[in-house]
Length: 504
Image 1 (cartoon, helix red, strand yellow):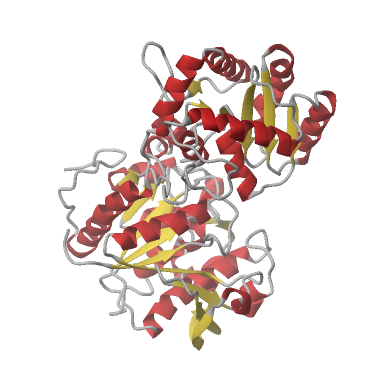
Image 2 (cartoon, rainbow, N blue to C red):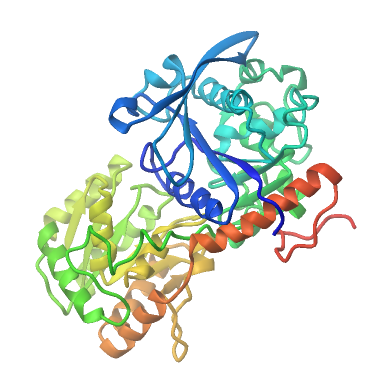
């Protein structure tokens, strides 16, 4: 690989400072892995109100710098975390971020993240740190590739900067009205209409659509999801745009940081084990049952699920068959998560009627999640769609066998067990309750045969989906983006896009 690049990585979330899900986990692990390859990676996120500089030991790098915003100037500050491995900066603005105790769901989210994106560009200018690559994530930063092709096009500081834009979930596009274009300074472009997109999307501003149109390289979080979003079934109305750019669309499984996710040393676990010590894992199951109030019974398969309680995560089909599973299969369920209240009520009712078989914990706790991965026999992911997924990777790493809907990143990472070939989990298709029930029943049947089960566990635990693999792929894609930006020609890399070029 040639000389190192300066890479600006932008994410609205990053662990441990601000997190709601997988985006924060990826933002923590991927830039660090890329940095270990010798690239100069720096991360910028907003400084939300709950990020306390004094408690976290942040120090101020830029006290006050101007940010073009709407027809005038807003002023921002810049803080830095005491992170020895990678520089992490925080954009400070009291009205947009400092006064908020949450990350999203404010009426002015469009303005807030336009400001964060524009301030990030101006911050690196004031640091005199010129990035060769800006890696944007999700709709919050999707206007940056648009800006680099318009209002920053003749700016010498960014004239050679290429953009890689990552879609983590196409369902969250950042839909706003015309005013956001005025705020962003690109109202002269107006709405971007596409003849094959529904009229409703052509009459609004989809931030994500602009990221797709203007980025040099587009990535998403699994190869199968990259193919799926080219279709109307999964394209969320943007599949015509994605089809137009499919020769620049790549699916990359981000994977796990195996130094952090390791059952042999995980401090959250009551006992430690690896693939050669699976009998020790039984103690983890026993202590997990005690912790959540379920009776421990070796004859019952303990099934875990940690997810947002929502239709997208499969709770519609799960709750259609959960009571029959509790009544007719030798299983116990441990479900942890928060979300849609009508599902909460159904789970609470079932817990009341089957207290020995179901434990529902209506919140999320990271340490308990780790003990769930280490203690359950099966890990359930019946998601309607799952762009990438990290939970199935954690489950396999910790010896919990996943039962998954055969879609997106789940399809790419879980090998369906079909004897005599040993898989790493159990997959079902189509998306309905009976298919889910059948997959769980099949898994529970194999659980009753310890020799077969141990073989499946060992096979799952030896799978390698490390973040280092993803870092090597992104290192190549950064150079591809740079070549396309500067020369308009692709490099001969050994990574294939989601679709072949539409023209030679």
